[in-house]
Length: 313
Image 1 (cartoon, rainbow, N blue to C red):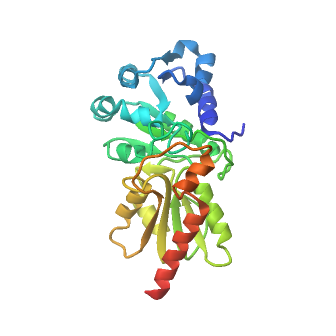
Image 2 (image 1 turned 60 degrees about the horizontal axis):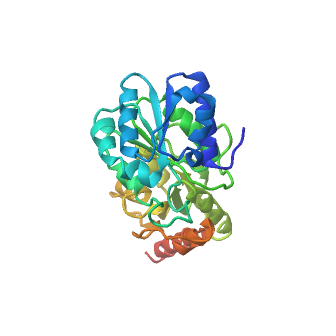
Image 3 (image 1 turned 90 degrees about the vertical axis):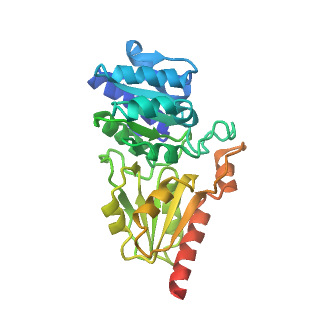
């Protein structure tokens, strides 16, 4: 079944996995109607736990369930999943390498109406810095389905970042998801754009609009950690520069991860993302993305800047 919303894809995939594996359990923090944990609750009420507005407690309970052999998925808004429960995530789940899957729903700016308190622009940086943590940011609903299956089968702590809104898929339905493997969605020879989440689609649009001007390689980096360092270096080879695109603070997220890998190269890098500031409220998601420069036009400008600098150099 095809979906256009990551949350709906996530919820339905959990139901499917729950049918196959009785050890999968789901915990929600009073937001199951938004995280789509409600779908699992309807299907398997005895394996769904409503923990109330208490992410820290929810995370501790998930850690305990993991120690009994269960595979717990915890659900809340991204800003609360990591923020309110960081101590429990670090001290218990990450240090203990417990098999807990943390879902950060309504990530980035996607909860456009609720402003800075409910928009999470720092979660990739936080979870990247936690040892033993795997960090996944799917490009779309199709990839979300396969990513959920992959992390359910993976033994260890994972963070899954999901968007709130409907948007078109850019990956093919049913494509197997391999943790740690970036995928080339468009070949190109001039500039490489590494993107994750919603920004993958914008990167593809930018590359198409630039096709008569520049050849742009677009890479979907849905696993932000662990990053396939050798593969990233290989995908950056042969181009005159690199652009990164993420719906996240430019500090500590995908751009920083790519820059770390390419630090010994001489490739220039431009970062498209949120310029170290919090979100704000808006009438709609598109308006908010434009306000923070998360657009195909911004990506095009960054690509052109890289190419122009290379010609001068």
